[in-house]
Image 1 (cartoon, rainbow, N blue to C red):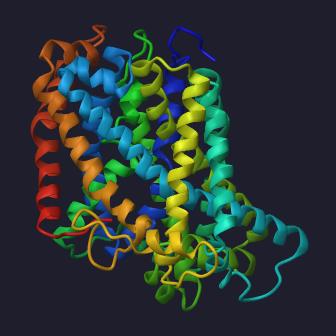
Image 2: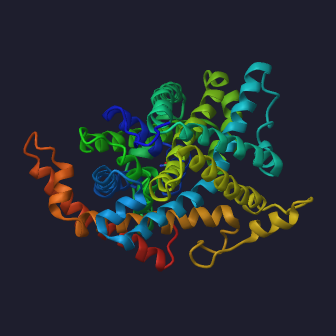
Image 3: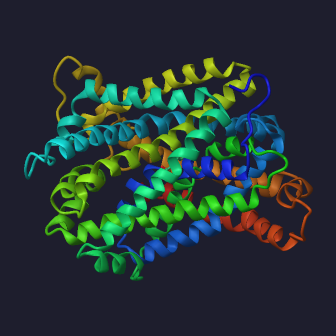
Amino acid sequence: MEGRTRGQWSSSAGLVLAATGSAIGLGNLWKFPYITWENGGGSFVLVYLACILAVGLPVMLAELLIGRRYQTSAVGALKKAAGPAWGLLGAWGVLAAFVLLSYYTVIAGWSLFYFVKSAGWSIAGYPGEGTATGLFNEQALNLPLQLALSLGFSVATVAVVYFGVTKGIERVARIFLPVLMGILVLMLISALQMDGAGEALAFIFRPGPIETGAVLEAVGHSFFTLSLGMGAMITYGSYISKKESAVSASGAIVLLDTLIALFATVIMFSVIFSVAGLRDEVGASSVGMLFISLPEIFFTQVPFGRFLGPLFYVLVALAALTSTISLLEVVTAFLIDERKVARPKATVGAGLAIFVFSGIAVFSLPGLLGEEVEGPLSGVAGFFSRIKVPFFGGPEDKVGWFANADHFVSNWMLPLGGLLIAVVAGWIMARKDTAAELMDGTEPQWFRYRVWRIFIRFVAPAAILAIIIAVISGQDFS
Ligand code: PHE
């Protein structure tokens, strides 16, 4: 623990690893392949890459520089950057952390479940075709099991954040990130040997027609996947030593996150295109790819799948953990810096609150899976399964906390937060302040700074505003 002095990344590599750990998560492994599938591949991927460069990278730099300049939590940093009222924007981020963590923890819990299951199958043998098919609903509707899994995941998150920036967050990222990438590269090699690999690559990289809605969906996802728009990167930026620069780090973070998303998509689609009949199943549900079809395919189709299966679910769990850590740190840093709570107390308190939120998401699972609620918990479960937030929760068919929370975070909280952060960095902060952060004086960096400034003042806000206008006119992005 850091005692009275604030923690700091031990080096630029420490920042890159921790922030990349935050960025790489369920967004890369679960959401990106799915929305690429939904939007027909090629052109969507191209547009997404453009959004990452034109919106993601500038906002990443903006968040890191705001944190680095004021060396305090998102709430405090935004107050110092733009005035007391802007603390509300930081508070918006803290709220987003709670809402996002509520369902994110539940999905992370599924990966824990499938890790244990598939490790068991590796040792004892796969019980036979069809075993995994009904399993997903069975485990997801077992609410006590789901609560236990979420609790386990929350405890793991708290256990890391408890030990602070260097000894907790950075240390875990240093170990997990290389492991995660190693597993993914192994899987990529295995996937590329499957029959469907060629078709998969063509689907992902060959441009075709694209709809306007998909363009906007790509912008929204670039926030989600890079952990932007809710203060996570401001918080991580506040642990950058004044001796280190944020500029090259942000390039590395964005590049790694993008590579991992593409790897995951190539792996997933190589499998889908190799297995007969899988194409039709996939479209049916977003969880389908990761937790319904894939488990069995590992044991019946993938070369070395028996070993890769459990490894894959560990990978998902680790990727999710380094993301939940950053979400919890947003809340923890706020409590420490603004409310003067000691780190141990702040972490455990925030962790408990988050567990309560994930309980709400668990109770809404029957609604998500279109099942009736039975048993002693049916009253609560029924309530959260059927809850519907008008307008902000998305279209009619999104019922229950889980679906509404996901919609609200992706379509409202992150884009709005990102827009306002761009306004703070581009329009409110003095030019000399942002310039001092982005240029360390060792080389003439005016050109780079000017390009960033054009993007953060004009390009990024215009693109984000376009999303918000589209959302108001009824477009769905999640
Ligand atoms: N970037 C994470 C992912 O892709 C999600 C996340 C969003 C984490 C916002 C922190 C803050 O899964």
